[in-house]
Image 1 (cartoon, rainbow, N blue to C red):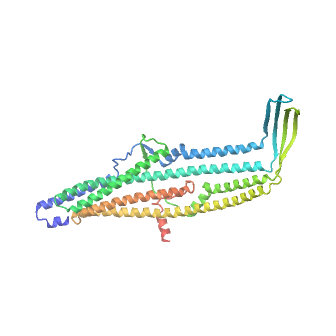
Image 2: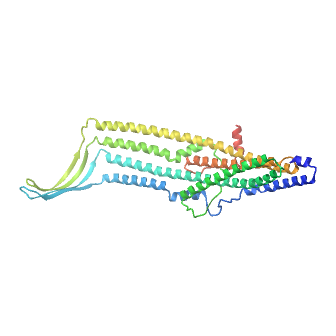
Image 3: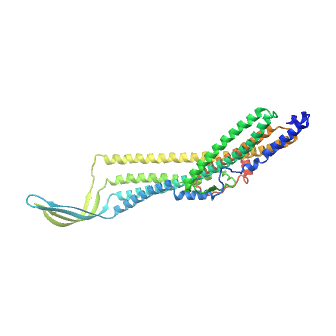
Length: 454
């Protein structure tokens, strides 16, 4: 382009170069505004915040309904164990015709029985079932937390793909106009054909990126609609995030909060208690089982004719079974030990995951700052390239490269923020999404820089 002004001898050449400069500037002037124009994404409709999305997901979730069904089952079984403390009313009878000395026979045995001693078996079964019921309550909380995490991740991914689609739309729009212009200049032999091929190949690459992001956006938005229970016919728009939250500087704050509120810690202790009560239930079988009994006995047969009431104590006792019960108790003891170690391993893996999420979140936080720095650098570089083009110091090819680098920097910044938000959602899940003292990137940059230097 510089040679066009310096070496041109005729007025027609100068006029051509001035026209080229004007076309380039007009082509790239609207690039910033094109980023926000959505030609294929509907931006009007019901505004759904992330908290509203979580609330709607809870209202009609199959996972929660299944967990509630399991909870109802264990609650019914627990109430069934309470009935073991109440008396039992039972009856058994038979009547019919027969051959022989008596043509009609009858038998009736009815009574009420109240257990008075079972070696603690009924109490152990009640406590065991209560522990199982409490475990299901905690599992219901885990299902809700997992569902909230899924909604928050999905929400962040939809916003990411929406913004990447917008960026790709703007880039396609500008490169399409630039490609047509370069083709015309190449046809007039003002520019070499290689420039036309370069722009065209990059345009196809950007179109592929646009289609990929748009299809991913449509898929994720459909999944989000199904998750929160919003039909396809309803227009939906997502609330943009505010400032990027800052990860807390102390790992212990996450570990401490997780130990207090995460159901995984309580669930292990309840599982161990349930196994211990199973052992006590087996040990109770060593003792005799006694019950108060009142019965009415009526028998009509050839040699028997009774009609009586019996009041007394009934009992049974498994005195010796050649060690069968003892081996069952020993096996249950090993099962308790296995459960203890399994829960210990589970807790260690859980806390290892917290540490991993924490350090990865801090790394991603720094990645956001890096992408923001690159974005500022490319914005300034693009401004400088436009100035050089006007003064004749650079050609259109350098300006196009600068524009492409700027758009890539914008995409990288969007992806870094989305990746960080997903990581923070996973980290907040470990403490049940309880609010904590958080700062923002802008307000705590100096503190983090001091930590990094130290």
